[in-house]
Length: 241
View 1 (tube, rainbow, N blue to C red):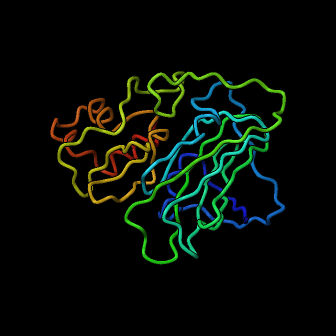
View 2: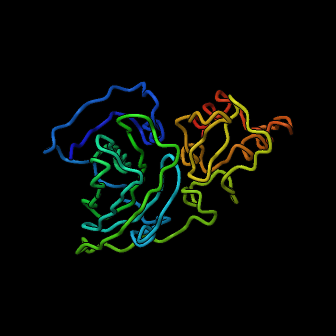
């Protein structure tokens, strides 16, 4: 398994899914130390959340996962073909990437107690499957003696209540007329438009706000909430919240 490091902030976490990052990308040797997790006292999910869980989607993003040192999250994807790779982005106190053949699956073991942000995607060797099913496992480690973070995300959008700019967020956004160029939050927390183009921005980046909430806060026309918000509006909001 190869580890990769990128000099980006956590706000660019979603951009790993097929989008070009403006920051420089560096390949770290396998022996390089991985950035540690955020030393937060609160988290939304624990390792147990992943035990036996299956998700159908192009990619999976789960933020604010409280893990103890040694706890491991495993994932397999179906269909998995020779040459396909599972890509995992891990955000905490820094950001790094891991990859493994899709035919064998990928396991991440927490190097230290703390809170992590995860994103799993598939790099297809050929034609990308039209539907992907992700299956997760959780195995407990010996732990580092720390306490399990407390869940304090009331609306479960991946942003702690203390930092949430929009309370009561509901995912996915309720859009009646999806359109190309109009972005809205999916159930995974990533923003995409009606043509399934991802914005490289997550609900975490927007301070816990969906497109509907952003539009309402900015006083945008009512019909905007029916299809989503423009990429420029989304980017500006994420940059200031």
